[in-house]
Length: 400
Figure 1 (cartoon, rainbow, N blue to C red):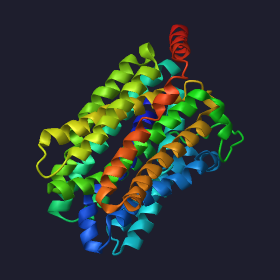
Figure 2 (tube, rainbow, N blue to C red):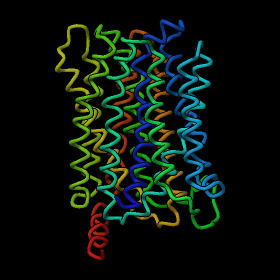
Figure 3 (cartoon, helix red, strand yellow):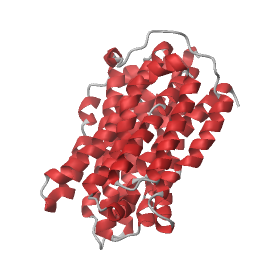
Figure 4 (tube, rainbow, N blue to C red):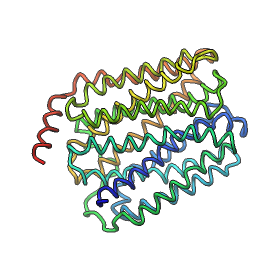
C-alpha cells in the first residue's frame, strides 16, 4: 500500500468514528429518557454537545497542527475522544453526560480536518471525485451499522453501551496512525484562526451551503426522528435503527454515481436531484403512524439516503477544486467547521421547533421546515457556472 493510501485509510477511520457518534446516540434516547427522567428536547443536547465540542475545536486545527505536528495532534485527539466516550458511558446524570459528550467531541473534532489536510494534497483534482466517493462510501458504514448495532446494544445490555462501542475502533485507528503517519512536520507558514478569505471562492461557498441545508437537516431529522418513530410506530429500537440500512444502500448508489459521473455532469444536476429526493423523504415521515406499512418507512429513508448523499458527495467533490495545496490546512479547517456547524444547527433547530410549534403540530412543523430548508440550494444552482467547472475538470485530466 502506498503512503498516500495509508494516510487516506487513517483519515477514513477518523471519519468513521465521527459519524458513529453522530448517529448512534439517538437510537438510545428513549432508554436514556427513562433512566435519567429527561425530555426529548433535553436529550437532543446529548447529540448537540458532541457536535458543539467538534465545532469549538475545529478552528484551531491548522494552528495546533503547525505547532505540535499533525501525527502527535491526531494521537492526542484520539486519546481525548476515547476518554470522553468511556466517561459518557459511565455518566449518572444528564449534566455529566452532556459534559463528557462535549469533551469527546473536542477530541474527535480534529480527526477529520487533520486527516483531510494530510490526504487531499496527495491526490490530483481530477482524482478527488473518486477519493470523495471512497470517503463517503466508507463513511456509510457508520450510519448503516451504528443505529442498528446501537439498538441491539440497548436491548441486550443498556444505553451506556452505545458510547462504549466507539472504543475498539478508536484503538485500531490509534495503532494505524502510530504505524503509518509520518512524523515529519509540514512547511512552516502563517496560520489563520478563521481563514474567511477562502470564501471568495464561489464553489467553496456553494459546497458549504449544501452541507448546511442538506446533510445538516438530515442530522436534525435523524436526531429527533428516531424518538418520534419509536413513539408513533411502537417498533423496537433495533428495528428503527435498521431503517438506516436502506438509507445506506441508497447512499451507496448515489455516491457511486457521483464518483463515476461528477466529471461528466458537474455539480448542478446532481445537487438539484438530491435536494428534491431528500425533501420528499422528509415529507413522507408525516404519513407515518401505527398502521403504516414498513415499505413506506423504507421508501422515506431510501429517498433521504439517495438525495442527501448525492448532495454531500457532490459538495465534497466540488469544495476544493480551486484550492491550492498550500491552502489545504486552512480550507480543511473552514470546511469542517461548516460541516460541524451544519450538524449542530440542524439538530438544534429541529429540537427548538418542537418547543416553538404547538404540541399537536410540533412534529409536522419540524419536518416541513426541514424539507423547506433542504430545497434552498436549488435557488443557488441557477447561478452556478456548471460548464466552466466541467471544462476545468477535463483540462486537469488532460494535463495529467
